[in-house]
Length: 329
Image 1 (spheres, helix red, strand yellow):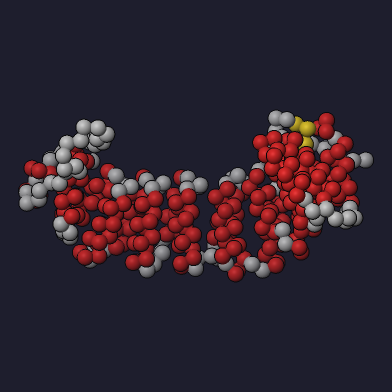
Image 2 (cartoon, one colour):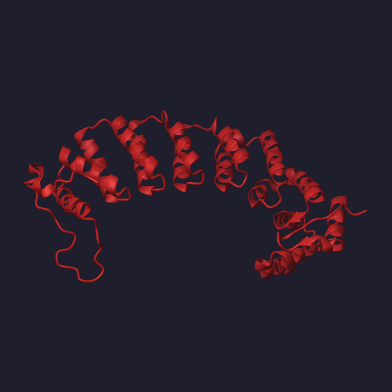
């Protein structure tokens, strides 16, 4: 952790009176710290409470944060020390990066990194570093949160879309990458053109061919606007004819029918969901009761869905919770 020599034996700390965690002996619930860590904390409390801003205090935070990277007060005190001592922030970033790679799921580290980058005023090398960390854990929520802040603050939208597409090609079940894709679409005007929306919809529908992957089916809801609804419906029916009806596919069909007030089609779809998605049976039955019904002529796709769900129950697979159908003759 640190030098084996006790701080009490080091002349550098001879003028400091260590401050214990408790003013009196605790008999119940005392935390059993390692002796070295407990000693460092005693000296930390003393210099921190006395508002000492010195090299030795900075070195003490270095040792403490290596031992306990989640020590928020230590990070805050270190930031004050760097400002007052006018330390090189680029060197601090090198230290922080080394610590981050060993503790990449630590919130305090990423919060501190954000404040440090604000002071440096440059994000050079940051995206490359984040890519390394995400290679270790591609679903690290702290890294994604920091990445979104970085992209927004420094206007780094251009290459992010390709990076997220690469992640989804590697792992279509990566919900963090799908969330990042939605973040890009909803926050940048660059991704809000109708041409881009149509192109991206085709990308999502392609991933929907993996009918047990919930991620792209959740993402489809982004495109429930009127001009894209017909394409979504056709895409889902085409997938159902080839792959079958997963509960995720059925959910999207039901929601689309509900938007069009096709009550009879909703009845068919939601009742089927109540059977195969039994954990949400009450919810789907409630959806049946509240559906608005209008006399709307069925399309060819509606007729196919209706016949497929009503006439082919023998293809139900209770293990995977989806229906596999051949196209009705």
